[in-house]
Length: 208
Image (tube, rainbow, N blue to C red; front, side, top):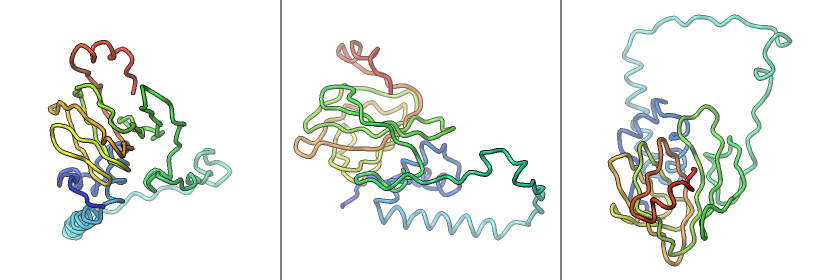
């Protein structure tokens, strides 16, 4: 796997510090899982942040009172059971429930990823070879990790392991690889705004 497009330094630093919305963070985690170079850069950010913490004066933490097990809320007594590993699904998704694949267009299917409390909507997207999506832009973030296959648009070609970090300033027209198709993991905030006459016709149908 030859990764060309990686998460920005700002994104990796925010991920290392735990400052990202969990929906965005899980897509970054999938990219890190697939790319050794991003894992190396992440360790550098973690080392810098660790050194910074070592340099500041420690502050005593408030001790949390112990509550007997029988008086704890039910949720405190439950262990979260990770979802069994699944072929083609990154380990970063193991803690989350996945919905079934559902068609949302001709040779395009979507699978929701349930990330409780996240602002971003997270889903897997699968498109058949040669699919061309309408020109569109976003009112928020659209972060994508390519899991298999590839697509390309105005900003380059994105293949397995690559990270596509788009925001409201990016207009693009993705075109899926004509041989491999594409499967990717997406986190999206805000709305998709489809462009052109076809986009205006399809806009009422878009519900990611």
